[in-house]
Image (cartoon, rainbow, N blue to C red):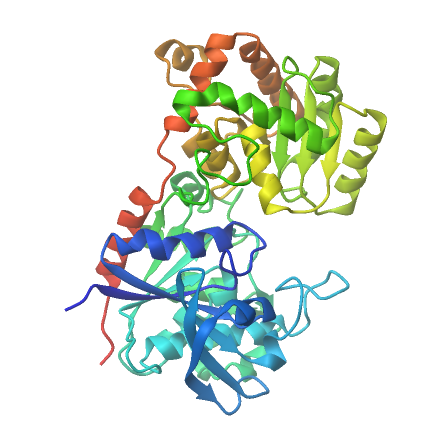
Length: 484
């Protein structure tokens, strides 16, 4: 018998389509799991960008009518991944952001679009595609949250199911009127099923009906079972506490490797860490910052939002510049934050620079050139930015929440004396606490030996998928059930 077969159901997968960390995880897991004897294939919507990259695709299944139009499942390979693409033009043949229309608001039919994705994921789990019978269906976030519900109410033996919460803040809550389009039995519209605050909760359905719930760090798994971080789902999660597991994300070591990264001005490794300075110069040049070896360069690679705590950084920014530091920012998001950082850059040329966009290659240069990477989030399920920073020797400054708390060893006196510190943590997420952490970073930056040791500690930390892949494989085997 071959290894375990798993169907991953996700709304985005790197490098085919990406808006956030979900895509990175969905793109990296299949390769990481191959070493655990797990054959993972990924179901993703057939966005134009996906179909353009899907080579040698064959029609694996057809639907005469799927939520208002014909659809088919295409099977093929893209970017080294085994892909099932849900080719439903009436739902997914739209350019740009997978979730938002041209006006920046949610597509009004997102409820139907991602119910279709979940329904097809469940159908494949139940044997719709010859030659691939999954033992487990792995749903990611609310967009795939109904897949465990379709399996639970299928009325026939079904594979095991697992749902991963990448960010509990996004829940997929729709009016109750959509229930009658879903094709679920009437009894599913209950607290024990998909009902949620008088409507239909896609993520809630997955959390209630999947065999196992995972989230992307041990600390976040505990946090979301509290009222402070539970986003009104903490009661359900506490009730299912024994089925909730926190598994840290990793980073793809082939994509994020400073020794081979083609996006860098200069490749390097821990034995040649001093060569990293050339990337700092290249980043300063790219951003229009004053060239200086002595001025610490603080970097931000982030969505600009209240969650990410970047309003705190706006308040602390004058303090950074007054002490001789520089700030480079890459990201976009809420207009008031873009405006605030834009004004700061305009008033402090040579010291502050912003790129209000997302550029994957530039993100790599940020990680290789910045001295410090700032992640002041109010909550953070895992965070990939600080993992990449560690791998590239950019010292992270993070709030003590979620996966940030689990992955960065604070540079307190004891950790510095023991030679194990990899960055700086602060709590609570406040202006005062962030300012204090930045002051500590300036102090370390002035001690060349201590700064070098902290960078090397970060680069030698294990941020790979090896450990997480083993944990996922164990959970898959614990819930695997082969459909009859």
